[in-house]
Length: 275
Length: 365
Ligand SMILES: Nc1ncnc2c1ncn2[C@@H]1O[C@H](COP(=O)(O)OP(=O)(O)OP(=O)(O)O)[C@@H](O)[C@H]1O
Ligand SMILES: [Mg+2]
Image (cartoon, rainbow over all chains, first blue to last red; front, side, top):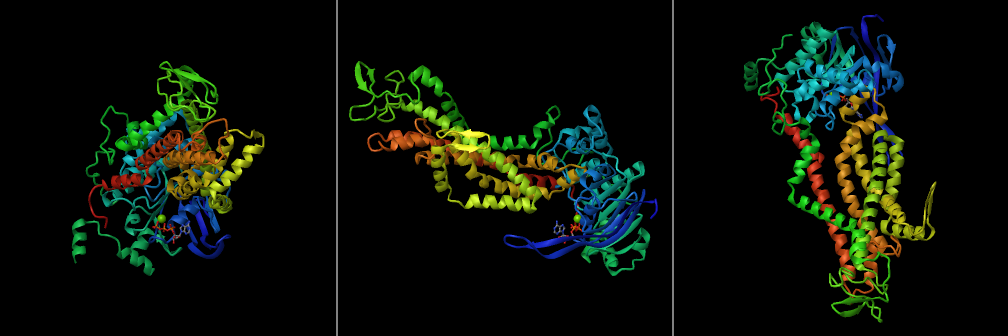
């Protein structure tokens, strides 16, 4: 392995047991959500992970973040094996890798104020407190395009795009090296998708972030990814540089995904729909 | 970047989008929290507010018991006046006739003494007993409600968060409690404990103590609260905000109490309110059957039981405490329903869905 790779995943497997039983649950089958995938993300680069709904993208992200215990496989962060680390051992690594979630409506605790949501990681990791904490949270809010006056508001007062900005502020609070963005724009309207992607792009340049960027729409990741991995039924079916995958796809499934990419121009899109 | 940013239509940079109009400047943003919205919805519900007022009046009524006893009735709840006579308007009335019939309501004719008459051949002041009995009934209802809620929330959190065998064990215990014929077991337990008392580790409860019915009621009502809480914790545990907390390094305690518990608050409040009402009914039934509050202490249940002996001649003696129970339980149920409507998570979902739709037009391709 090389020093260039911030994250290296090898033969990652996550199976969910399907249980049945009246008194004692017996395992009757498995959902092979992630079925032996390998990929790497170079420092400062972006790996786009694409695949249709249910292909196991979120499960892969969760396993990398150690939010779910992988069935087997290796996850190396900065060359260090993290698969199966205890919560205590994982604790310091939490600062280095953070996640932006798929659903802006479920990823913010509705009972907490925005300021508290963004402050939580800083408090949890003991990074800042008191007036310093508040100042840092307000800076973060401003950096992601919100106003520091939003500090005392509740999530329900915000639109989906604004909520996703809050999620980004929370993920960046600990100044992580790796940010896993699990379909950060799928739930958003197209015009807002561009804004959020541009924000993430700017933040990457400014902070030297490394992204694992997930989407079900290959058109979304195409422009910001250095490399793209295509996932289908828990497996990676094609992997390569963004241009290679988009211009000369080898796999049939990749070709299908590319054919489904919407045309950015609304007039052309309308024409195509009318046709 | 090849993607052109478009301004978020209709959104001033960073302005809040809400199902409610944004706060005018100068109004604290804190006023627009979920509690404030729930409060707004609640006070719009005239009926619930009306019955809340009634409940508060009932609470004030029972809290005033010592004042009435000392300054108006000049007697205690358990004090017998069998052989005494009242001088009313120059007329002499016996508190209890030689045939054992208690005096009827005197209203203010005897200066407030025996306002509602005497309770039985023991000649105790019915009004004073009603006020003190209400204290006991409400105390049992509220305290067992608190115990039930506390135990149910902890069990529900543990079962719903840890799942697996923790959940299996807790769920089976609750199932057993749930399937018992509650009143029958309550009576059996209440009677045996009322005679023998109860030793729970370092806590020792005497036979006649009101902590016996509190204990019995709490044990049997836990499943009714713990089950729905567990279900809600299961659902909340799947939410991404819980994963976000774990991704920050939060442990089980912070996740359960910092992330999940605040989202249970509305369920807890509604269940607590309805639980008090149920517990008061339970207490009345136990006491009526001699398995709850023990004589000479009064509760509304024991008063019905005492009054029942004179139901044909002095029906008011059973009806008055009965009406008090009815009014209290009714008001708590209506307030509970009102709180549910105001706090209901589903109405919150509706609100959120609406807020989500405020995003600029444009078809998602
Ligand atoms: N906790 C779980 N228990 C059982 N099955 C699960 C669990 N989580 C995910 N799965 C299953 O694993 C498969 C992959 O799910 P995953 O959420 O990773 O897909 P995804 O690629 O993120 O899809 P989407 O684009 O809809 O988010 C699905 O079939 C899903 O039903
Ligand atoms: Mg997903």
